[in-house]
Image (cartoon, rainbow, N blue to C red; front, top):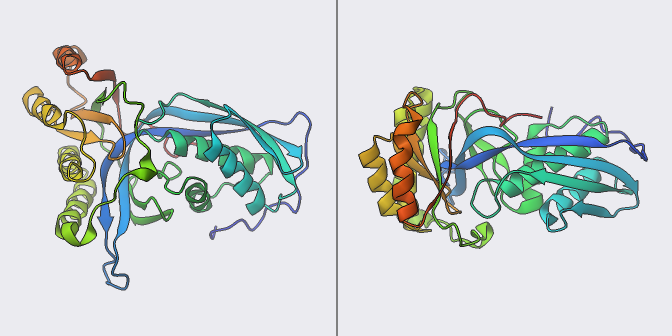
Length: 317
């Protein structure tokens, strides 16, 4: 379906009891985040881009009920981006005279760079579309998500996509395959409260063009070859480049631990505090226990060990 909704109802029927449900997945930061240039050079300025690292499970479940009037009431009350998304969706569906009651249940920590706001927004959009009886096209969802929160993660798309997070569209589609890693999740600043993503600096395109062009080429080749170790190497390189822009506390310690523990690589949230050591999924989990002690000694908080790859809900409705 082309961007936009062609078969939305003229006006949704408001039900006193009907509650629509929308769900969205979660991620663990990025495989890469950087800049992308148009191959044709038609557009000289670079486009901020990223490839997220999806992880299993539902991030947010949204419950939405249509109500008369334009007001959106959201619980918890601080989820203002989700409330904005509900309003944008109703307006896009020719339901401007309607409002709604929105309840969100999220398992994602806020401020660590794990996609909590996009998961809230995407689950909300899906719930509103369902309440109005309209199909939730991923392309439209991406555009609305960016309007709701200024920059969004590509949780509405399945597979590996190079995504323009501030424009809301796919730059390159690298296929449905995603590497299977055993991921050791780490909060590098457990008492910091996280970062304001939109307040962080962006890379200097003129100074880093060759490096980011090479990084995208490296990651593209790794995904096309379905080479998990090469994907981990690209993630490590992206994390290293990001230290010039948004330094991560304890990064050198993490890089050392990755090298000495047999990890395939290191990935981070480029705009948050979370990091992940990427291991072959065949590794025995209890052999990672000494790492947990070393991380705690560095005032970092291990958040768990889990699998990435095909068992994700990235494209789940």
